[in-house]
Image (cartoon, rainbow, N blue to C red; front, side, top):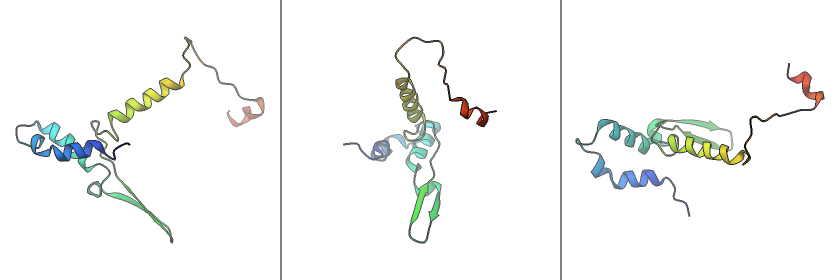
Length: 105
């Protein structure tokens, strides 16, 4: 079972330890941004029709945030490397039928 926003839960529980004057300001700011990520604190976009409404909360765009920063980048890189063949190669050539050539001048 995966936890929903585990970093936020940990940061909230440990806030008395890291949210102090002795902690570097950059660390406190990064943790604060991560806590606000995908919440109403940062605002949202509302998409609505006559029958339904969708609210998409803004992200913090912090590098240290697990949902929109470094972790997402590392995961994307892992997926790309896994998609490549496990062979040594110098290049990959993609071909297409000649009927499609006029679409790509």
